[in-house]
Length: 239
Image (cartoon, rainbow, N blue to C red; front, side, top):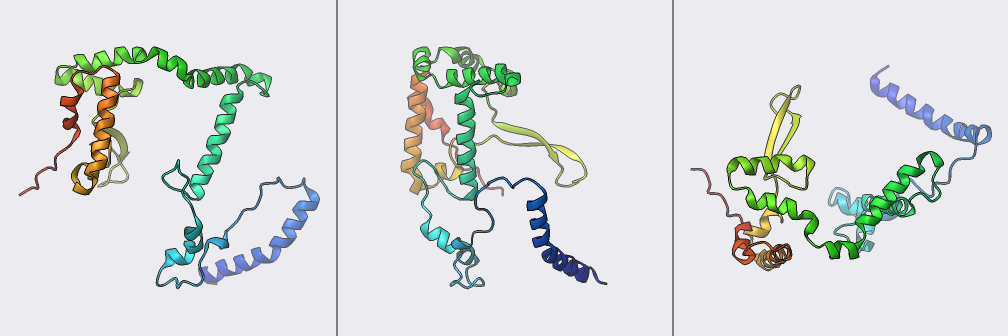
């Protein structure tokens, strides 16, 4: 029997015995947990569209027509909904602290709750202002050599600093059976096109104003003179 025929026969057998298995499971074991409606949602499809012309419209058309992106989100969808639900559950755990927690983990739960409460204490944060990060700012101000700057970036794994380079271990593109050190640029404050596209100049100006405001808040020297340095120029094309 061919491989395709075997798989077809197995699928047919599975479909044939599935109802009986489900019934047996319901009578012999405990009642299944209530997890709500689940499965493939056909209400979002648009069967009026031809899949060969526009498969996205065919598969998601009616959902796309009625979907509304929440005002506090940049996108929406199934995974966004799962993320919102998970965030709400994590917040409940953090705010609850040790209440309703098993005695064996109550001490750790109390620490987690206290840590979260301290992080969310806006009045305390406003009162302290930039004092907690003053040592970090001083390290940045005193980094005057390439060696000191490299050391500053290298300490990112144990501090709040980041690097202009991303260094990681990943599979070698030329030899997938081996690992290699991968180095890439560390990213920009905005997408690169915001710096280079004239149509986005207004948004870039608003971003630079925000950067200037943050620098002024921490007492950084001459922020108005330094802000234009955050605009990368397009590198020359190789000849």
